[in-house]
Length: 250
Image 1 (cartoon, helix red, strand yellow):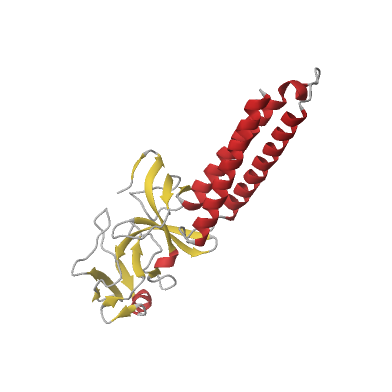
Image 2 (tube, helix red, strand yellow; image 1 turned 60 degrees about the vertical axis):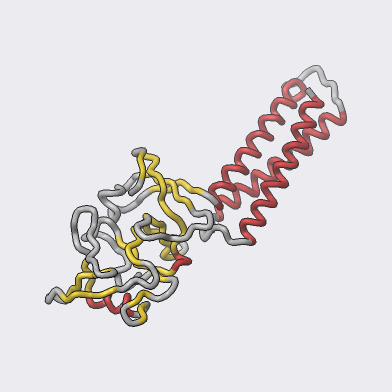
């Protein structure tokens, strides 16, 4: 049992080093735009737990202590194996959360009927580049994230058609986009001015996107004067799967 525990300890050491190296490489190459302090804290704690379990496992085995009584004496190697397994598993989970996929919860109704408040989704964020019609996670500030759909890409032609009441219907590349419930996207004069600031003539400038909620009449999005076109650095990931209720996202 002692020899097996030592072998596991060295294997765990190798896995721990690999996870640490991957973390450093991923950070160095900025593979994710998300900054998850809680996940990094969990990862560091898991690394420390792994190192402690490795050191104790090797120490217990090398001393070959033969203590006949006591719970620790009888169960120490089994406990250390479980602690090692737990530490490595948590390292892997936090690594995946920080750089690849992350579970999240929809808080608002702006994406109805595609997504509803309380829906749980999986967000992919490893080296993600937004594409037209993607359902994306937009970072507004350090504590505020919105989920929206990409409707216009850099270089797209944006026009505004006056409805005569101070509002405008948005046209993108010659078409009027509609929500899943067949509603046009309407913008007021202040929102229009915010969009125009990120346009060169009729084209949306490089690195900027228009994102709208599927609930066209109840969504704070690129039509708002306080948000406007979204820079690519603010688009941190794509919702790829709905966990609850289970299903895809179109």
